[in-house]
Amino acid sequence: MTVEPLTDYSRLCVHTITTKGWEIEEAIDCYKEAGVSGITVWRQWLEGHNPDKVGDRIRSAGLKIVSLCRGGFYPAIKEAARAEAIDDNRRAIEQAAALGAPLVVLVCGADPGQSLVESRKQIISGIAANLPLAESLGIKLAIEPLHPMYANDRSAINTLASANDICDELNHPLVGITYDVYHLWWDPALEAETIRAAKANRLFAYHVCDWLTPTTDLLNDRGLMGEGCIELQRIRGLVEAAGFKGMIEVEIFSDRWWKQSTDKFLESIKHSYLNYT
Image 1 (spheres, one colour):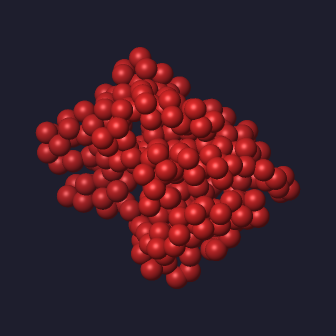
Image 2: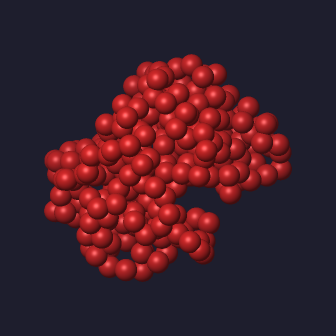
């Protein structure tokens, strides 16, 4: 499969968690100066801020607001905890609308004290409970399947197929998928499930980083694109052949990179984006 090279930064989006040494104001200013085109805001960067004003500042800087991250974490043994999760997701949807973000990324959650089957049922019912508000505000809900190593407590949705299945069951145009290469690159069914998702118009977001060998931390040792073993250009070819032409979002959790200068990290992101993504 031939993949067109990336020649500019018109599709480059950076998550605020990636450059976590910067507060929201500094991230906006530095992304603008670096020529980054989009921003995904993590909810903790809104703490103490008015989302409306943050959204205005982002737009004034010429950046596209790609998404708000994150909602989800629906499953729990106790009913009160499940109800609180639904309420928190309502707040996330309201924040996204105020910010001007078109979608909320859902890290769906799991509870190690119950079966994955039960957690998946609670994820479906939780999203369904949030859909009326999402519909009234025009906010998409994008399920992010996570790597199976997170199945015990971070997400019971671990393959693109399982995310597609939930979307099929909910059958709503505002419910789709966040496609993160870090979580999906290993899947032998990736091509078929990518096509399945695309045919249903549910490829809402596309996240990139790389998988290091060895990986020293299951959460905070992701690589910069080109540092690891993920076939990034092949996978981009899959999603683009399936019709996805949206922003390419750099989401890197890395204790190693976070110890570096944030300015240097951002420049490294720009280089790896053009050369390896």
